[in-house]
Amino acid sequence: MLEQPVAGNDIEGLRFVRKRAKLPVFADESCLVAADIPRLAGAVDGINIKLAKCGSLREAMRMVHTARAHDMQVMAGCMIESSLGISAIAQIAPLLDAADFDGAALLSTDPFRGTTIASGIIKLTDAPGLGATPATSGDLATAFQSA
Image (cartoon, rainbow, N blue to C red; front, side):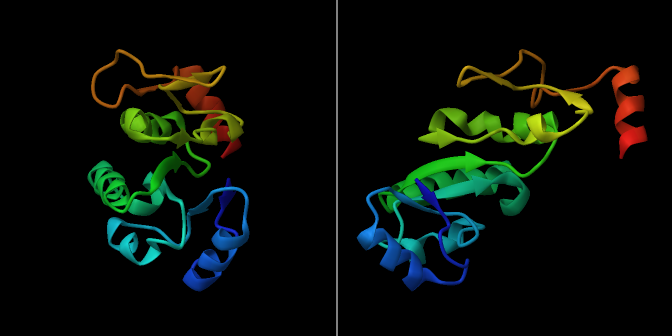
């Protein structure tokens, strides 16, 4: 897929690329919340939800349903964030066409343990709530020293 191949405010640019591209075009910076989705109808094939941008799981769910109502595909991604953030957005994984949850893997030390991804399989934990727990105190000390 092509993810946000033009500036976030260039909806006509997205439409231009989509008409000519052989790959699906997904909006990222053009789509922060559900209210952004209707203006993207016909300009993109799908949207990329990032919890750090939309602000809540409730808004992420609104985005999924709004995109589906406009016949769009839905993926979710992340910023560079800990397993706490990944564990949160992973709660909606069954509703997605694609997921890009690699943010915690980019950290030198992750202060949380939670959802894991191995061989393309997202595995939620059995822990309560979001399923994320603080890392051990030794891991946390290292995380805060490197911050």
